Each structure stands twice: as C-alpha cells, then as structure tokens.
Length: 246
Image (cartoon, rainbow, N blue to C red):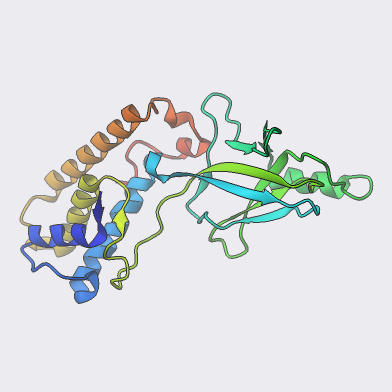
C-alpha cells in the first residue's frame, strides 16, 4: 500500500513531470490526485476487498429507541450477507445472549407498524430491522421494528469503501488501502488519456495493464482470504459485470 502523495509522484515521474511535496503544490498534481480517487473508486466497485470490510457495534438502548445512526457508513456502503443463505451478517452480541438478527424491507416494517393493533410494544430481545438512508443521503440508519426494553449490543458487518481523499494536501500521507499497482496504472491511464496526443504509450496497452493488475490483485485477495464464493455475498453483485468499472 502507498500514500496518496507517493502514487501521485509515481505518476508524475512516469509523465516526465517534476515530483511535488504535496498534491496541493500545483493544479496538475491536484488533478492527478483526483485521478487517484477515480481509480480507487473504480477498483472498490468491482470487488469486495477484504480491507474494506468492517464491523459496526451499535448500543441498543433500553428505552424503546428504534432509530440508530450508523456513523461509519457512507452512501457507498452496504450490509454484508452470508454467502449460503443471504441472511445479513447482523448479530445481537449481548453477553451470553447472542442471536442472529434479520433485516426486512423498510416498506414491510412500516406496514407492520402502521397496522399493528394498538401501540407497537417494546420487547426484551428485538431481532428485526431495516436499513434506512440518512436524511442527507450520505450514510445509513438502523431502524428497529420494535424498541428494546433491555440494553443490547448489535453488531453489523459492512462493505465500506475508503472515503474520497482530499486534494488540498491534507491527505498527502493517507494510505490508499487498496493494492498500489492497479491504482497507479489506472491513474496513469487517466492522466495519459487526459493529455490526448501527448500520450507516450498507446492507451489500449496501458489500459490492458491496469485490467491485468486489478485482476491479479483480486485473485490474491480471493485466495488469501478464501473468498472463492464471494460473488454471491450480496445481491448487488448481480448488478455488476466483471471489471465493469475499469
């Protein structure tokens, strides 16, 4: 893994440009840093990289509260599902009371609440929830079907891509979590394509190199972390074709 600045300078050297002490040192360096973000997001969207998987613990209050902000999520995060049965990787991990949790469509949750005969009760061990976009659309909220009458700890697992890196110099030393080589090659491809006629290497060759580097990194992540069936981890995968984002 390399920092944002290291990747930017590697690309600048390949373009026969002077390296910089910060991506904010010139408009061109900032442009290359923008291409790094583009390459990073392309790669994040075509595979479930282990480094981007995270767990979020939520303290469920004993006062019946049903809505909890998942502050660690962004609009590019999604809840991970078990490979075999597609159940959410969501668990009540309260000490000595562990259990599987189940998600449901938000419309179904609201239908249940709105047609419940009387006041929706709180229960000792709630287990049904929906994932709801935040009001600003930049993350997600956990909405319980029923509030809890006891303090609980819920743990959910997410695919949460790294946040976009700032191009004002504040993220110079931030490590890009995904493998360096495909990020570098895809960034270089974008930079050379932006130059148009100045391209010193045919774009199609560089693009093939970037594809090959991405495929090799994906294979390594798959084998090292035993993720051969990961394509079935979430229904979102069916919306993607192989390497569609690159």
